[in-house]
Image 1 (cartoon, rainbow, N blue to C red):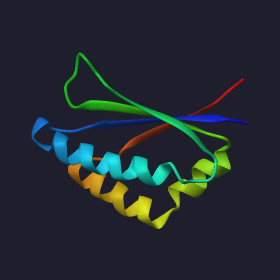
Image 2: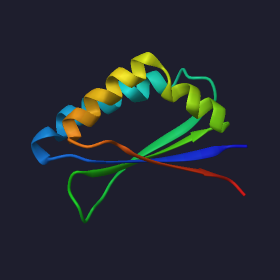
Image 3: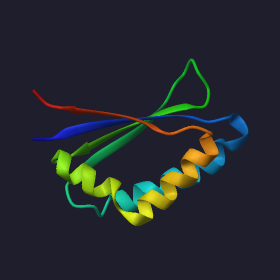
Image 4: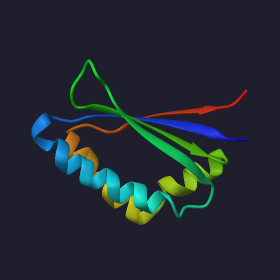
Length: 95
């Protein structure tokens, strides 16, 4: 069953362009992952620096496999260091 992963991040304005570059790298890698369906990136209009990605995967197992990808882990660590806090994930499935 398909799952949607909401990925929330908040970054200071001065680091926004660096975050954008890391997210692009992540997106390119995601496109070739087994089970990846789609992704959309949003920014909050009322709160600068806050972004959300909605990522769709064929299954929870496909998402979990992606989270264990070594290259992804490296980029995610860079992102979290830039943010100064861990990225927030919420996982949902269709009912």
